[in-house]
Length: 176
Image (cartoon, rainbow, N blue to C red; front, side, top):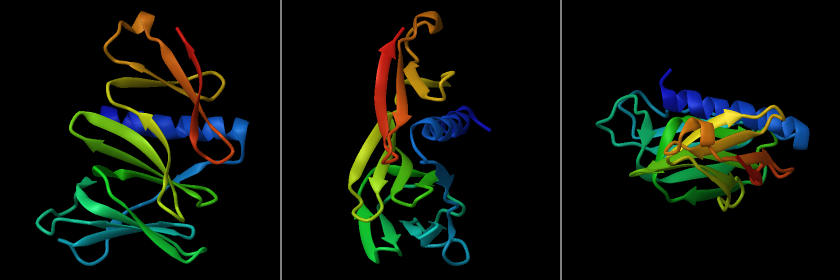
């Protein structure tokens, strides 16, 4: 596993640990697969009552990312469909909260990279964690922390996040 997938997997593992302390919120991965035999024009995935659909450039077989907007989110419980315009979505980093209220996606554009959190009924962005130029670690309390890659590892200034009861990240401290 390359550095980026390990980092994101660590973040979500830490989010799950942190969530256990703050609420019952946990995230489950959404496996995204071709809607038809490849090369497919669309890819879909589902967790609980939340379904996601990505457009795909048909010339790309087994894509690692989806650069075509929009990402369509269907919430089967509320019978709503909404769409998210954005950057490039990483195929292996799409997650739903265990209660299916929040969708978390890793998105990037140029040198920017973030975890975005969306309401699955409205597609409103409800949280973001900037991953551009950051290292990630898990604290003893179960939170996850990010610090700039540009500074010496002994002097990292870590920013700690927890999931709040609504399954969105919140910055809880800055310390060296």
